[in-house]
Amino acid sequence: MTPPAINHQQDIFKRLQLLSGVLVSTSSLRDSVSQAFLMFQSELGLKKGVLILKDTYTEEFYIDVGFGLTEKDRQKAIFRTLEIVTQRVIDSGELEVIGSLCDGVNGVGFDEDEALPDHAMVCIPMTYSGEKIGVLSVVLPAEVATDQLVFLSGMSLLVAQEIKLKRVLEREKESLQRENVLLRDELKEKYNIHNMIGNSSAMHQVYDSIIQVANSNATVLIRGESGTGKELVAHAIHYNSPRAKNPFVKINCGAIPESLIESELFGYEKGAFTDAQDQKIGKFELANGGTLFLDEIGELSPSVQVKLLRVLQEKEFERVGGLVPIKVNVRVITATNRDLEYELQQKQFREDLYYRLNVFPIFLPPLRERKTDILLLSEHFLERFSKENNKTINRISSLAIDLLSTYHWPGNVRELENCIERAVLVCRNDTIQATDLPPTLQRSDTTETIKDDLAYEELVANFERELIIDALKKTRGNKSKAAELLKTTQRIVGYKIRVLNIDYNKYKSAG
Image 1 (cartoon, rainbow, N blue to C red):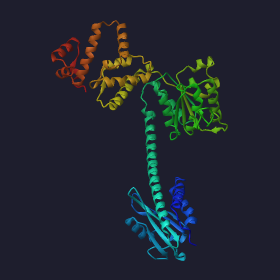
Image 2: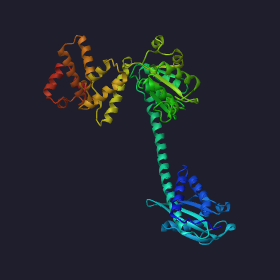
Image 3: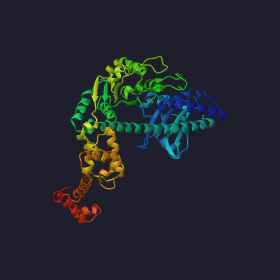
Image 4: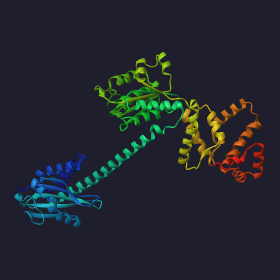
């Protein structure tokens, strides 16, 4: 039976439009091309269809989709019989029609029990933006009409375009997957407990707590003043747990208005309120399988506390405006700098929620209680900010270290980090001097010193002593080079060394 010819350009356009919809209906190229072959089986009387692609790396041809091929066709390795025609069409860049398909005729062979003398094969080259992608071959009955060839040429162009697009998307997907793995590994390394800075006994207790709780699903409550590194501990727990490959989602409960916090945590359904134009996924759903970090948990209103308690107990919730319970598997880590026990007494925090959150508390000490870590942290920040700002700053002067060590650090580690960053920016040589530190630290040190009844002359003498000692250390006790470094004369340096009782000989072997 001869299929109806495509008689009008309008019919060609409609069929190409229909084909375009089929090709984009699925992310699988093989599925979409197979559906296209199936659709035109009745439309064009299509007997067989073969999509042959060129490997982008080896440049060899392979059958990607074979429609209507018999088992004998496949066992016979039909590709080998099509190879000559395929190469010829690719080289010429023009379609080719092969008539009377009998076994062995014109270099094309199918199942010998299924010779097709009344059929023709049309082989159309597929190119896109100058790139040779492959060949689309179809077997049609009788003689092929001109309008059919026009349609098949349009079909090959659409298929080539879709192949190119899907290959680009696949490469991007693979690139994103590789990048995701690398980022996850970097995060795991960054938040590895061995990379945390601090050698004080208080911090060792924190490390022990992280190791003890990381492999469990227990709820953790991290306590500590602002700037002590509570979020860093939450990251360390997550990335040292079995959930490390799953999401780590964080939300600052104190930074979101009370009217929005519920929808942020649980999401909402379309139409739940005036501005709910679409469905929104909440933080609990985003963290499913992983960890949800609720910072500043003490800022939650009593109404949201009730709903949070239910999630922790039942492991389910409803979106705002929703009716269907949503089950989640989320580990919850919370943090606060508030006195929750006082909040309990004032009826500002629910007692049942407090005990549900306080399963495994971790207390982070303020920086003023871990003085031995100040120098370690300072050197760590110095190295980091020096690299970020392309500066060569190797050390911190003795007087600057004294100022850092005696300051009370109300802002804790965060304040120290900001202090060192500022010092790196204003430093003009390779050593952080006391004058590079913020005025708050210098005023604090001066106040402490004045309380110790040191006179103005003694303060100046101490400062001069530190400057000369730093210069002698850098020049290995060479007074002449030290004078050059201080932009003064050797005579003045020698005089100050004698007056200030500085033994420059002991710095001759110093690095």
